[in-house]
Image (cartoon, rainbow, N blue to C red; front, side, top):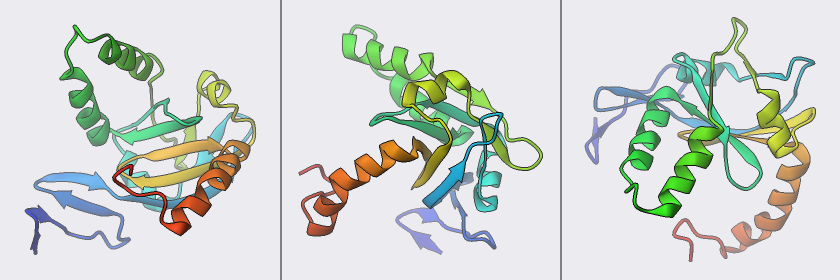
Length: 166
């Protein structure tokens, strides 16, 4: 089946699709967790295959962490690396993005350790919210997510927010 030159073959759990010959995860939904004493969260089973080649955790924007599967991290890296070194804002972005990136692996039970320095950066203590945003996960402290959601949910429902930023 062809749709805008993207071939979709759904996995039995409906979480994976293929773009050309590359597997891409479709990470969706909102999930709440409590970190264990070692700073781990157990990812939903439907997400684990997407992170089989590692999880690239980095400081996101809006007080969260971004968790990329390897293929998506490589794609984002190509975008960042294509920016001119002569541009100060491009250099600053690359420093912030790569300087806070940690490559992690899921353990045998599908748990992800969130390094203490990244937890500290976003104020993540115990309660976490994990948002699936199709090509990446965002990991929030529950209080930060609740503030963000309270500030944006009404605008979204009323139509004041749009995917085009207008």
